[in-house]
Length: 130
Picture (cartoon, helix red, strand yellow):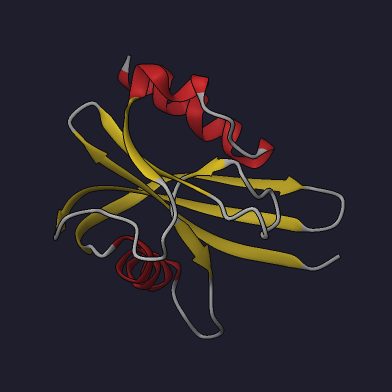
């Protein structure tokens, strides 16, 4: 089974995290997610995150650091999530591809339906910031 490397951005502003809803047509469609996307060949994961957040959310990262790493097997695909914490950026975060998006209090994250691979991220954010 092919492993897909994905850069995931935890965009944090105060006690809020930016999330967006996946298109129904995509794998795990209709669920909430932290923005990001697939790593391209010859691209460093930090470059992937910067590119994806500019394309998807319209922000330019000015500071990011590694937050956690998760591998998850969905049965039909294996994803390697490289999660970066983004607390400094230029621009206004708003979804550029028409998806619904929200700034959510960290204390409320568990109320949203995230893909299984994202559950450890939600738990870690709650543990770290509440």
